[in-house]
Length: 299
Length: 299
Image (tube, rainbow over all chains, first blue to last red; front, top):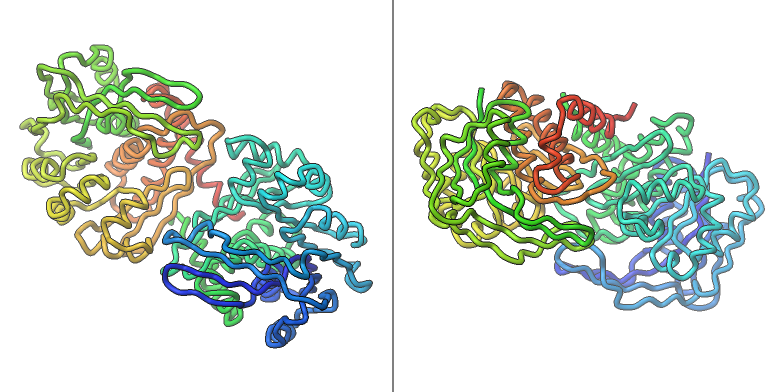
């Protein structure tokens, strides 16, 4: 089994009241693929500039992540600069330089088109649709989006939703997409738009999975220290898709995937960039997975 | 078994963007006692003015709630006027008229002093201490507080904490009390102040219980409609203390109590004032209790 991800690879500058980092590896496809690679093989489709550090290329390769779909283009890599306040939530964007990402035209290499598990990270819904047309018979497609696309490309987004199995967004995006303040009604409205599953990511409050089989609530382990929440959502998606590619035949498999997604995300935020993901051992994941389950266990 | 509560009885005026109510039954002791009375016998110590509507007195009596400790004083009953925004969180206080509550001197009637389960609602810590000196050998004392007392009466509050078993507060109060942004560290610091158990109430995100045995996370069922969140915290406490008075010999009893507290609170917010609590049937509680447990069940 392998998972295909289409998204961004970036160089991030992140400030928090406590510490900061400059021009470190970021981007949805980076976080996703490193998380998913803890569970399965991963292929990336993305674009980088000619200034993309070779050490990051080697990092992906060392994790067995396939980069044939990563276009290396003349110009600068996508850069994002964000600043977090004391609550370490909702960063202020200081600068976004799309650079080579501005004209990203995702081309799925021939040998990727049989991909069964596909994740469309948060990009223009027109590009998401363009990707979907290139993959042949995916078994499971998940996508992310954000308020910007809900507002700027609602029609195109609605079209994408007709073709995906799983939508992963946060509380306020779900409410905005459904134009409905109550999360239960919002979830029902979104499930009527196409996806069979809606996963609402709630950061330190866990995640909710809605489907016609009901609702599942995954807790989030209270962490000792949150260093940098950047990439938590994409890491969640990577852990989820990575796990589900080996266990998608029952609703408990999907529930376990939500917990694995939450577990991997809980590690990511313990350090800047992908630092914690890179050092993460399988045993640490299993230990925290058990701790997550114990957290809501009555016995 | 019975539970003693010391707190406020009030007439609330509540506005939401959707609807409002005027001069309806409110106050921590009212919500607490009506919730706890679903599980056990309850005795109230509070103060009301001579304008307190007889229909509310009859309501408490119809639920078997003992009012011998409720002082009826010349003057007006405590009034609170709050306004909620669209998110139905953190109300703006339009007016607080303490009235007879300003000189509240809680006197525990002789036949209440043997009380085994005691809840000190959110009042001046000096009064909480004054109450504790009057009860003889309580088995379990829980208390609530708020940012106002953390800031205005820190010494008095710290003294109270040395004498209570359980503190129930929200996230930001826990952080402020411990002067520590991370909730794990804050919890440890608070457990060092005296209580054996800290319950952090997180509204629609459930509740966390910290003790030396570990952490327990109770989910909160996503509701169809939240009408008025007023009283959710006191209802939680009422459900918790009501249940625990019959099942306090194991750590699973405490976990079940947290879930029952969350369940009863989830009903309270479905209507204004205590309306939903008053109509609540035991079967509805059990049905939602099962739904809560199912919510985080992997199978």
